[in-house]
Amino acid sequence: MDRFEIHGGNRLEGKLTIKGSKNATLPLMAAALLTDEPVILRHVPDLADIGNMRRLLDNLSCLLDWQPLEDLNSAGGTLRIHADPAGNSHAHYDIVRTMRASICVLGPMLARRGKARVSLPGGCAIGERPVDLHLHGLKALGAEITRDGGDIIASIPDVAGRPGRLKGARIFLGGPFGSTVLGTANVMSAACLAEGTTIIECAACEPEIVDLAKMLTAMGARITGAGSPRLTIEGVRQLSGCDHTILPDRIEAGTYMCAAAITGGDLTLDNCPVDALMAHMDRMQLMGVTFQFDGKLDPLRTSCRVTVGTRILPTELTTQPHPGYPTDLQAQLMAVLSLADGTSIVTERIFPERFLHVAELSRMGAQIYRTGPTANITGVKKLTGTQVMASDLRASACLVLAGLAAEGMTTVNRVYHLDRGYERMEERLRTLGARIQRVSETVPEPLPG
Ligand code: EPU
Picture 1 (cartoon, rainbow, N blue to C red):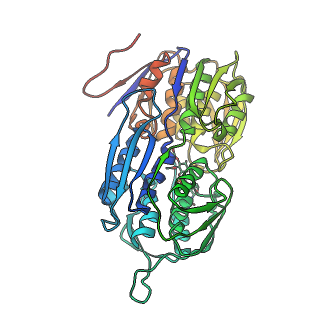
Picture 2 (picture 1 turned 90 degrees about the vertical axis):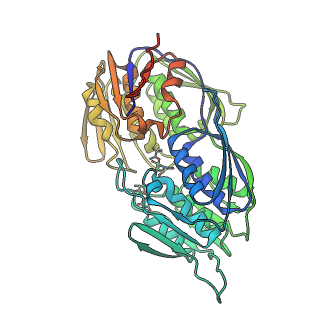
Picture 3 (picture 1 turned 30 degrees about the horizontal axis):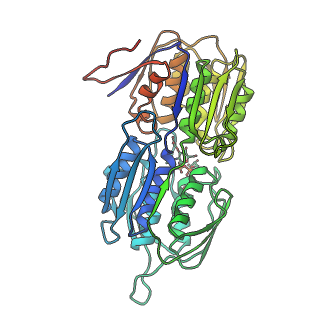
């Protein structure tokens, strides 16, 4: 298992191009199952999760052509997906268990093929992660859903002996923690091929849902309201192929903003979706971080310079569905707050157990006191490098950030979590001046600098 060794203390400086969004790419790839024509996706990041989704689609009878880009500073590669609607409709546990987002093939496969069998994804390090809302929405569209062992079996009932179609419906998709991102993606994608009009209330407003609606519209779907809590979808009989450029990854951008802040650095992020990061940038501005961006460029793909004052100020935040503060940046910002000049309060309202990074940050000298979904972080003067264990994707990013600022060497073990969501993070950080290396059990790289 690979680990990162980080010698902290270097100030990060330079330019980086933000990759296409992982969390947008996964449902976009699944949406290729809705059509018999090729779908071309550009700015696809080269990540373990995307590789798993390619493996899953290959297994579901799609022809794939993947052209990665070697350039470390590119926005990503190009992927062509051509689905065979008569092919295999069973997403097996051995792939689904590696990636919870596999669930987003359920809606598209059901809508186009009339049936789908998808193994139930288990929980993960950040919590229980049920899929009841996905099933609620698909049932409202007329799907019959049963369970067999660990599999969900979904089908559209025949009408007079002929294959039926999903039926448009009014659906409330809110749950105990608000809207669901992949649940909205699943139900919206399926509703595109339903007969009649579907209204989804309490739909997720995340930029990744807007990007999916944009691609579905380019395929011939009729969707209004994307980005608001009410989506209206007029079903069509069939969808065509398309050529779509993926939204930049707001979480990767937000993480590198934290890297600038925690090292007192000066970074310029190209292809940066500032419009999708307002809550994060608002908190960081209160903490003393300055952002300068080119207002003439598309605010979803602009160039943004991040600089920091002499001290980091504390703040208070609560994670919420978009446009609130994103749960996927909570851990990374906490690393920065652990060095702030005062006490910060962070409340997690999406995944109340998403605090696995707290114990590891504390091993590095952070002072964090957690009660239930709230953490009180009293800033310390310095963090100290030590061995820490990555437990999930964003917690791992938090530990890398802490290591960049810590005194001495930090070893972040189990970085395979990071490879799920950050393309070649250690190489990209090195181009900015960090002293970080990946150590594989077999072939260690030489330490730079
Ligand atoms: N929920 C339910 N029932 C459901 C679905 C969700 O109760 O059927 C609950 C969840 O347990 C959670 C809340 O609703 O408390 C929100 O979960 P959501 O369904 O929105 O999460 P998701 O769609 O499975 C995506 C991202 C996550 C991100 C969340 C929240 C992808 C592939 N994953 O997950 O990203 O944290 O939205 O924004 O898009 C990550 O990238 O590190 C990551 C975990």
